[in-house]
Image (tube, rainbow, N blue to C red; front, top):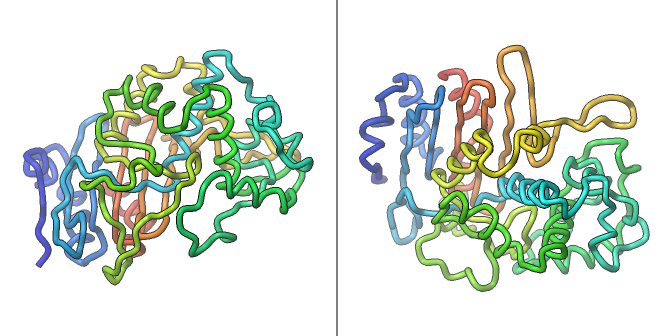
Length: 340
């Protein structure tokens, strides 16, 4: 039987009742007991933490239990952090969103010369997504992706459509590194981790591949499926639910961005046909009369992640897992949001 690992707050809150409903508790525990959830869960309702727990194993082979401090690979949840880095540089007047990427990245192929930072941020650039072209490769780097892009072409006229592109966010990371003269690891540590007192999250690179207490990735059948790329910008970050909640609060209270720039994160781009794209600066955004939702998911190798934020009602759902497709992200999200 898998051991349930809970800190003191779990017994008070998810124990998990506390301020939350039994429905929320029952949903989380039901997914765990059915083998669909091995990881960390943090749920906030109306600015009150109603669930903060870890369930299961850091490593299925060694049966090492998860801890609140265990960092998980968050895959595409890194994109909101990369976008935040770009907006921070704009706030410091070190770039403009309408600048062309070619102003900062040397040796871009001719077909990418007119693509703007804004288009990269909103996935409206037409830049081809690299992921399917490198399946099975280990140790993939940003430089290899950029070399691959030289043999590709635009998928559509920039600004005319939305199409998710991991390659575009690698280009954003290169822009950050060119402007600051620092690696993404150093930049994120200085501009985001340190101001927010984030202690357990890090950008993964060649120097951090032997972190002993990080979560190890497995697939749904509990077979080894750990993360092994070295790309940054589109992914490349390990984090905890607690650290991501610090980021969530910082984006709400203005401790990193001024109000104008914070709102830009959730502003949807207008496409050439007059319709809005679904993606702002690092976030999928949906708005109705009762709520404004900013969210992102992530998935690669044995890791799945969820970061859902109700901006109007101060509610947040963060889930990080290390058992691949055992965790049905959107099914879980649907049930939890209904319980809130």
